[in-house]
Length: 274
Picture 1 (cartoon, helix red, strand yellow):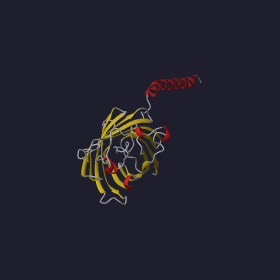
Picture 2 (cartoon, helix red, strand yellow):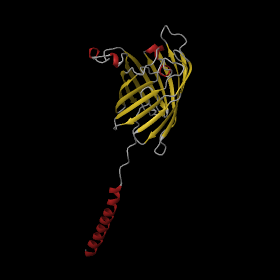
Picture 3 (cartoon, helix red, strand yellow):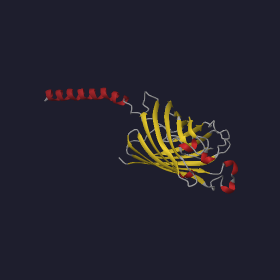
Picture 4 (tube, one colour):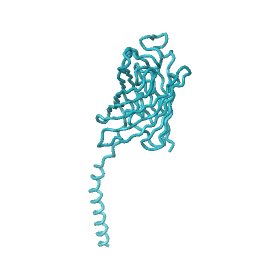
């Protein structure tokens, strides 16, 4: 009996020693860090980003830009909220990883835009930059507009500055706009993650040198995100949202003024179908 107790006691001591020895190792194991959330969606405000939703993701985009500048509004029209607005409704789908197909319709000139975006190089832990290409066409279908079909191509390059900021450059070519042919421009965007669910974004579209009466375009946004949902409140002199409209400084055949500030918003909703 004593020998049996000794054997059992020895086994118990050995198991206790192994358990105590392994405890510090388990305690030292830290949980895997969550992946960094990008401070932008597939679109930043108007410009495309290098982000592409996962395969099987269906998205809906709704944009709203009030027509009255804040400088011409007051409390009687609720600081332009009572004014009419230019709207854009779009749908998108990612049939494959790194590929997104989108169709938008803007109320300005009844403009339809079909686009395909492919991401060649996503960001990775040891690669703080990404590359993508977006190509497509625009068709203004308003009755009094003739010859307003356009082809466009956009190279998209993003650089991450740490885990919270990104700079995106979008060299853009458009074959046709309301005033010009063969337009080339290089819009730039900056995105900053203030918290895990709040982002600040800004876009700048350089002035079209061929249009001396116009100015550069700009727009900023404060974005709140929840699961598969983004809401942005926007301010800027850009009311247009399609490539042929914002690239040449000639929105709807008019011109841009740097002093005009229009309010608006973007709403994005996504569903995972796969």
